[in-house]
Length: 191
Image (cartoon, rainbow, N blue to C red; front, side, top):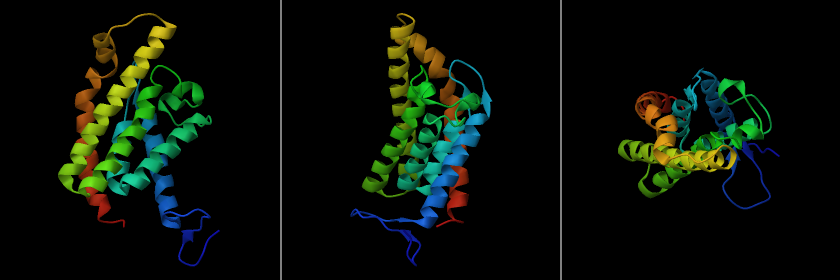
């Protein structure tokens, strides 16, 4: 139900979500989906997905950005082809590399935590995104190793890191820097 102040009324107490927030969240989820389609296929595809996650969090803030990430994941879970390679479905999330996608949500939660503790300052934003990326790598790697062991056989940590993390560190840091620079320009335009 909508009132004149463009807020969506809820029956539960808590912060209200404005209509404009829903628009930004939708645009954020769509941006992540579009960037995930730009891909170079490898064991874990090189995509612009991490760039979009960083940009959405930096532009929209922790709450709206994290909800955008959650909406993106839910869209993929129900079968929309929003993941790398135009894939979708719960099977992608429960596959070997699904932990890296779910790890984006952890990146958003860390970003929210840093915003609440330190405010939205440039240095804390960068630290939050880097820490979020590290947690995403750790969660995704643990997920990959668990499923690989269960489905294929034993694999060493260094092997998985060489497949799924080491090749992505420099590109992801470059994406983080670009997202940060772009977000500063875009944030000035939106509220």
